[in-house]
Image (tube, rainbow over all chains, first blue to last red; front, side):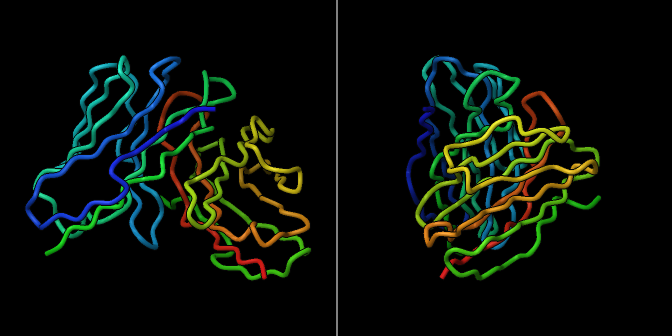
Length: 116
Length: 113
């Protein structure tokens, strides 16, 4: 059973602060790592899909890095804004391709609250 | 372009009843996934359909089943509802194959009383 863990569970920051959180996953048999943002009353929205060790991806003020050898990914938000308040989820496929592309195992999420 | 749509948005059922949830994927997406988020738990993988076939299922009892239609829309059926089936059920779609992101619907909130 794939174990994906996220920390911290929740985070409160002030507007303008930069923040980061962690996703840990088994380093063996790595295939891909997904990050999603889930705002209240909305659908989870994909941020990044990362597949290569050392990968760095950026979307506006949000960026992510990937270390497949040690089994972790960091998500960074620069200059947090109240609209960044959401649950941030990471997920990994449970196996090789074929029957596992969509069988994502999700972490419990990090709940980010950005105070004005 | 329309996103993933799910219906109904909310549903209240009595224990022992049966329920059907519906999902329409993004146009061109052939894979549909169902996930459950029960209270206090993370998203749990339920089922994956692709090209009309069930490709994989999570650790759920056979009471949970579904199907995918020729237009790639999908239904999730839950028989003999139990109180612990109360949850948010999310549908997601993506193109077949590859490690691309999934696009989620807004979910159906099922309450079993």
